[in-house]
Amino acid sequence: MGLPGKPPKPERSGIYPALAAVVVPSIEGMARLRITGHEHIPATGAFVLSPNHYSEIDPLVMAVAIWRSGRVPRFMAKASLWKVPIVGRILTAAGQIPVERAGRSSHGEPMAAARQVVADELGVIIYPEGSLTRDPDLWPMRGKTGAVRMALEAGVPLIPAAHWGTQHLMPRYGKGIRPFPRKTIDIRFGPPVDLSAFAGKRDQASMAAATDVVMARIAGLLGELRGEEPPAERWDPTQRGQTETGRFDG
Image (tube, rainbow, N blue to C red):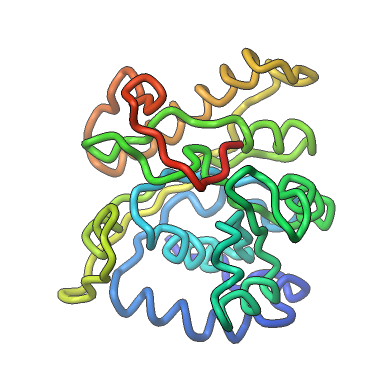
């Protein structure tokens, strides 16, 4: 199935064409991306995208998939990256959203920044797990509520996504990329998650239930890519003494 072409011209302004000229061929030189379901990415207007997460290189792979699907990727990212020379300037120019350990940023409260992205009719990628999955078999673990809160508050579609194969390019917690031989990475976008049952609700129980629905959809997409049935219960680091600090917790 062919891809829909370049993102809308207004979204390709500024630094994005230069970044795409470097990042897209670099990733595609190391991995063949097989993208399905790109028709579920809105051609225009705001949306929240929620993918699974198990490798540090996931955001670059997902960024290329979003670009190839006709939109510009914008992520919530660790604020510490803004302290890296040159990298911080690039992230700022690209409109990425810094997030501090406590969930706040010196650049402004992260959810407020994400709301502005939505108000500008752009897309924002929020990893609902908040960090790399702790599941031993790389299935999505228990999610956090930031993505569904954003989608419900803004009244925009929440698109689930899954990928499989990035662990061969960079293993979970790996520090180096393994570009040879060229890998194959499968990426699948699903139709928007129906969150209508949670409209107008903001209590923690409702948001947790809505997040469970989203995580089930992400796990289902991943199961399709892997040809396996996802586990009935998701790994819960809060129950197993396995938490990770320094990440956005929704």
